[in-house]
Image (cartoon, rainbow, N blue to C red; front, top):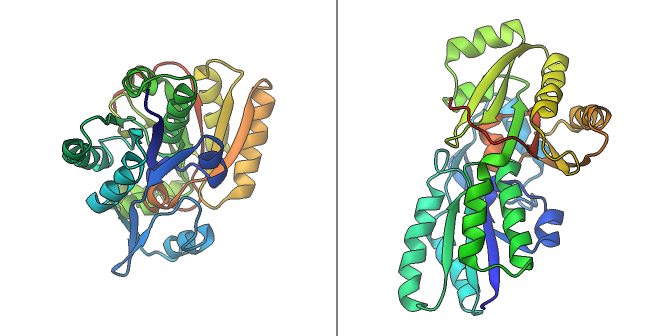
Length: 293
C-alpha cells in the first residue's frame, strides 16, 4: 500500500506542535486586510496573534479567502511526486468552498497520477473540530488503514465532534454578517453572550444566550459535561487572544471532569477573523450532533 499524507487547511487551527506530532500538513488560506492578502499560517509566521486581533479590536474588518487552486495544486503535487496518497480533511463545506476546490484539483491531478488515491473530506467542522478529524485521520493512517478506509471512518465520526464556544463581543460577528447590527448593539448593551455549536449540517449555530462572561464560561462547562464521551480524552480549549480566560476555562473543565486531559491553543487567523478577539471555548468528542440551526 502507498504511504498516505494527511492534509488539512488553515481553518483547522492545529498548532505547530500538533501538526508535527501527528505528521499533518495543511493548505493555506489567506487573510485580507487593506487590500493585502497574507497566507493564514497556523504557526503565526507573518504576524502575531495579538497583531491580528488588535486590528479587530480597533473596529476594523479582516476578511478571508478559501484555499487558492494553485495552493492545492502545489501541495497535492508535492506529495504525489513522492508516491503518496492524500487524505485532505477540509473545513465544513457550509463555511468554506475549499473542499470543492480541492476535489476539482484532485480530479485534474488523477489524470497525471492515475495510481494515486486522493480523498477530499468535508469534516462538517471548523477550528479545532476540523483539526480533531485530521488528527483522527492521522491516527488511522498510522494504524495502516487505506485512504478509502480512513475516509469512511472520518465520515462516520465527524458528527461526534462537539464544539461549545462563546464570544466576548458580537461586533466581529456583525461585521462578518453573522448577526444583524441591531442584534449586536442590543446584545452588547445587555451583555449577552451566545453559545455557538457546529450543527449537524456543518453550520455554526447559537443554541443559547447567556448574560455575562462568567456565566457563558460556566455554561460551556455545563454543556460539555452533558455531551462528552468518553471522559478519558483530550479536551481542546481554544481562545482568540485571551489566554487568561482560556486558563480559567481549562481549570473549570478539569474540576468538572477530572479524567480529561486538556490542551490550550489559539483560534487561528481564518476562524478568528469571523469570530473576533475574546472568543473562548472547548472541543471534544461526545454525543452525536443532531441539532440543526
